[in-house]
Image (tube, rainbow, N blue to C red):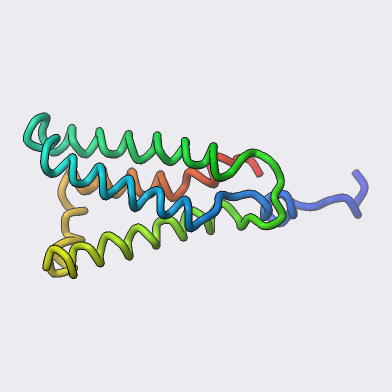
Length: 144
């Protein structure tokens, strides 16, 4: 192998150049959560229970995440895109900002009470789904 052509995958321009449009990917998560969260809390939890409702919501998060990646981040080199890890973290940050803002300012919940939902079984499922959603851009472009 020619030493001048060696470029480790983690630092190659190809690895850095792929990733979704992070604001659009984050907005997709926020909108999905607004729809699924209301549906789960108003309908699914009563009909099928909180665990099954959380699992249904998690499946929708991930399915919509993959679909949005297919649209926002085609598997081609785009010099203007950011790294997939950054895209996932930006999406997660946008979600947490929107979720916390809605809980505190619109619903009047203390932030600590709102975040304590992640300690319950349904909340742990939701937390896991959010982490997977944040990881999807990296998985989408694996092994780049």
